[in-house]
Amino acid sequence: MLTLIKNADIYSPEPLGIGHLLLGGGKVLHVGRQLPELDASLLGDTLDLEGAPLIPGLIDCHVHVTGGGGEDGFSTQAPAVPLSQFTRHGITSVVGLLGTDDETRSTANLLARVRALREEGLSAWCWTGGYHVPPTTLTGSVRRDIVNIDCIIGLGELAISDHRSSQPSFDELARLASEVHVAGLISRKAGVLHLHLGDGPRGLELVRRLLDETELPPRVFHPTHVNRTKELFAEACALSLENVVVDVTAFPVAAGENAWSAADAWSRFLEQGCPAENLTISSDGGGCLPVFDHNGHLVKMDFATSASLPETLRELLERGYSLDQVLPSMTSNVARLLKLENKGRIETGADADFVCLGEALDVRHVMARGQWMVQDQVAVVQGLFEE
Ligand SMILES: [Zn+2]
Image 1 (cartoon, rainbow, N blue to C red):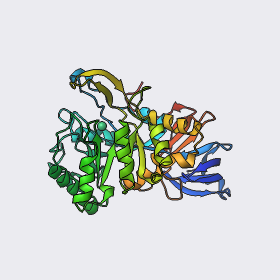
Image 2 (spheres, rainbow, N blue to C red):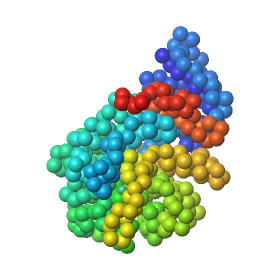
Image 3 (cartoon, helix red, strand yellow):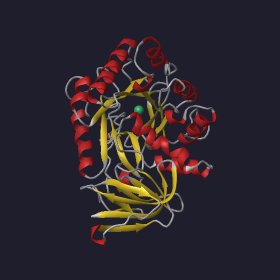
Image 4 (cartoon, protein in one colour):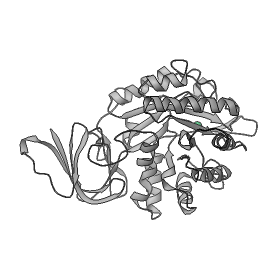
């Protein structure tokens, strides 16, 4: 059966105005201002949005789907993130990863969690590896993982400029980036090295050297957490002018902290004339947000969720930016860099992944691959072990 969504204020992310969508088989079959003529026997659900905004499902490209953490003993390992923790916040696509703990957490476990989310109706992929070098993999090789395992699109989050990193050398990083790049070419995948940046003073120095001293193209490097210090963000803005897509993390920032919130980073990026298509925003959902003192001792533990993406969207809209300005950083920019086909846009042939926003710019209805996951803010589909 076909589904009709009527009178939606469509942002593809470009503003298309009020229009109608016909959906079938998990895909968008038609988008337009004219209602399609249909035999009534073909039509299932009809939803009239009465002019409410309809946006592409959000893509969160940095999520600890297995649960992250574990940076202050085993009891600090976070649990796996259940389905509705994504859908309730408008996330219809995720890219999972391992972080500090790539020892008790494995690539096999990560893949299983990605496949579980797929079975439950979400779209999901993952990065192979974790913080460390040599990277944790399934097959023993980064290149082999990316080429041969469908869900794996690149390597991440490999840590640099951080006390928890392997302190990788220039040569080690160049070798891994080349493996990722070539694997991407062979398999027609993103082939992206998603780099965790710590707050060390070396910042993005290694990435600049890789661009200067190797033949690797800028699109291979996707540094994340670049808003964690103001100095690092300035470096990231400069790299974006050399066509590196940089990723901002929507973590909480305290007043007076030497960091930019995701909303501040997004607006500064634009005001400085950096290319809007070279910015993405992710949540670090499922991960713990540890705060260390100068000796590397944990002093505090926060917990991140994907809710920070729609919160950042709402914050920027309240500051007066428009949906078509803000959305690409959470939808089409991510899909383009990561080569997530049929994702991040509302157009004919795309996957039926949408968020309908309520009057308070809240996430009201969510559809993933043609299935309603959230209706009137209630998760109508849940993971097997959710309450
Ligand atoms: Zn990280």
